[in-house]
Length: 184
Length: 225
Image (cartoon, rainbow over all chains, first blue to last red; front, side, top):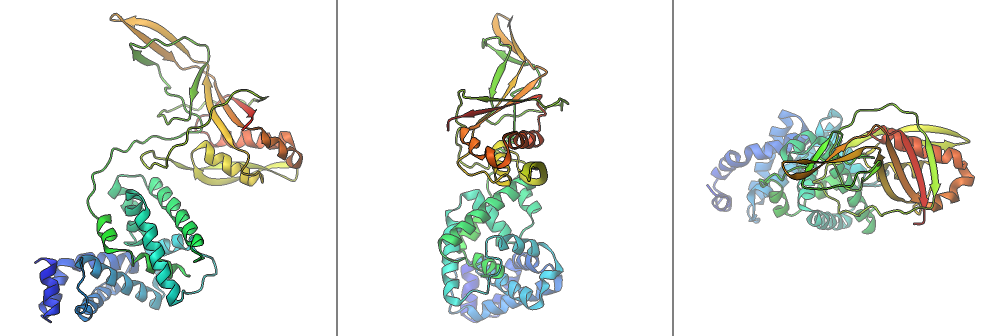
């Protein structure tokens, strides 16, 4: 079943939409959740919450790409769950990912205000869009999907060292960009 | 802004970018070429068909181009020679390219502190530029001091011969390598604070430690930048 047909089911309030979504994108959403939460039970709950959130948001939403729409929901829900449970201390890849990103911000950063959040979203989007193709893909695999460096290296046929250098350089560029935009 | 805020914002990038990231891509040929602090094109005899090369007691190899190679470590006492003046060539600027793989290594960076040379291990890219920048930072030397060139000389010889009616040049690797580092003359502005001998010794030690090739001689050349 294609995405348009699935979205149509949501709009017609056909509850089969959820089971079809689970069949088509369940594994994808679970891999995102697990990359962040590093816990089977929490990840399953996060994925279930994703289906509920999708049900509640379509309508009015009609996403162009259902897969990434769901992926974003899962990612957001997972990080919220992580913050609530302080699961960062559990370890796993997300702790390292967050530590790497902390290099791009001021050490004593406070949570961002809503207005600044919109500006940050826009800045990040522009920044990522302007990256060269491979840099962009590696960056997103690491900081969107929270994939381990080892897995990224294997995927691209690079050494882990090369991936680390690439990420380090991109983070440095990101930090400069945030400073230029006055977000740090 | 917290790291969670940043992670969250990354999550809001456009859908097409996320989709594109996971699209299968043809893997490009990866050239596992390492930029070493001193590289020579061959550690064994090279036969070049149809090319005549001039024989020379000393062969200068431009290390600004990436080359492959492997070397056996040769224990040798360090000997320094510092010359002033001389010609130099600029290290060609290259765009950042991830097709050339740069290794990350850990080596000691030597610095002068209160009249003695100390050292600290630092992780860095295995390039002379990266090592030099770290050395400058540890010794409080400004950006105006720059590397102008890095060259390795060998006392290898090239022999000409003929094979099947065609000219063949064979290069025989020598047994002594000399590391020639040319930097800008304005390093002299920093002699008074650290002492000329200590400062330049720390540079020599730093470059030697970082180099995969254990050369026998080190020449520091100061030239106008």
